[in-house]
Amino acid sequence: MRKGLKEGLTLHQKFAEGIIYRGIGGVIYFPGGCPVVCFSDEKSNLTGIMHIGWRSIGADIIDNFLNLWEIHGGHKGSATKIQILPAMCGKCLNFPIEYYSNSIAPAIMHTFPKKIISQFTKNIEERIELELIGLIQFALKQRGYIPKRAHECTCCSGKYWCYLCCDKNGKKYRNAAFIMKAPFIIPPPFAF
Image 1 (cartoon, rainbow, N blue to C red):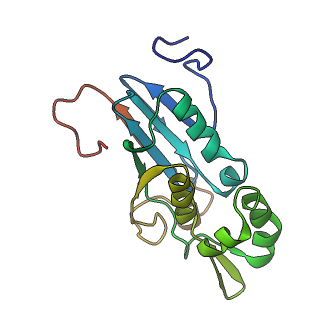
Image 2: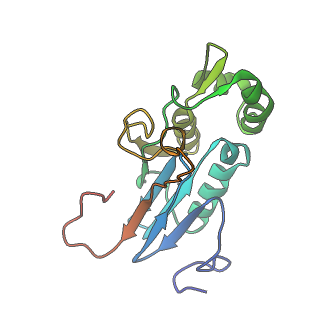
């Protein structure tokens, strides 16, 4: 077991579509176009990163991650800095009504009631727009956390790779999310 981690959490243990680590180190994460959320708690010396797609929401990934975060000393409220990285906006993340109704809605209704989900969906011309980042923010706030959100869409901003826009002619590209914890004298621009 890695020094500094509580019993039961090993260095290479994978859980909750994310990683939590203590101390100096770094993680590179390649999301598939879904939101990536970064966590940092200086008081507990914890850092983490989590991928959250609609399937993740239906599988209770947010609660699983936060439970582990808290077990290992992570704090709620402003002690834990949370940054949601750029991801697809609701206009870009849209699905045919039949697919949404048969696949997505049943999965996310496992975690949230229809009344809550309706605040983050919009029916537009035979398609359902899903404001996934808003739903993630809601879930984090419900647990007592204060997330910050990047306000750029990976699809319509044209600045990032997005599987809807960029995977063309058989070519696949990927974004990378980096999270680092090091003894910096002056925080770098990507620090929390």
